[in-house]
Image 1 (spheres, rainbow, N blue to C red):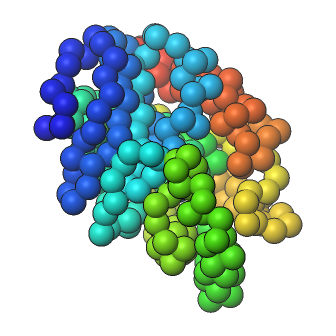
Image 2: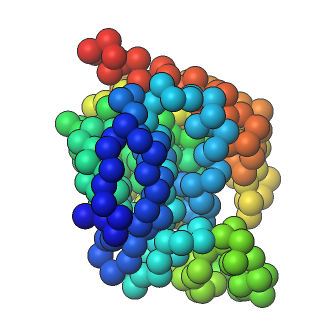
Image 3: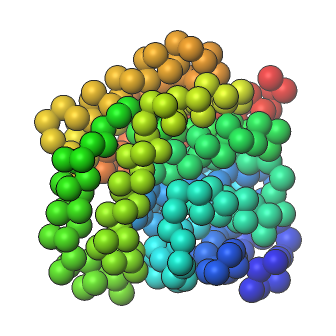
Length: 272
């Protein structure tokens, strides 16, 4: 149930979806096309997807939302865990009356999408994972300290940007803990079995180079882990490796992402 009455799936809808102790700002374009649910980067907003949505156009039904304490409208919560983010996928789909969807996730959202697709093979049409959901043991004690230091250093500027919706309404410590938890979720022992269990068409779009906070070739070494993943599970493939880096991929290589969405959606239309 939403705070606004659910209108026809044929019309555009914007409103708040209650879940647990919070509420999420959701936009649903409606229409008869395959529902696409977009999953944002860890501290990003639904607005990051606008170029992908424009490229794909009205052929699809686009559902975007801002996670807990992200954007201008989504509310605060006592739970910013990864599992809460996976639960939010179900909450948004239920509120919009969607039984099956194709999930499209970038960065942190790719991890959420991979987990949701793995756990819901009957409801997932497929998944497009943009430069995320790569199993790699990058978190150690030194990295934890580096993450905490980074968010402490950013602590003075993030509150100034909150009215714009560009930074989350979370403390520096909360943001650091979310990032550290992602390191644990990324571990080969944790993410590997999740990816092995995916039985729906899943395609990766990989960026190149670095990301905010990374050093040297860290990101490229993480991306290389997907060779073994795709070799062990034929449902997973790398569809594109684009020139833009992790932080700019949605802005500069949106067409490659849109083409990959069309590739995965075609499996559902063909009945395979």
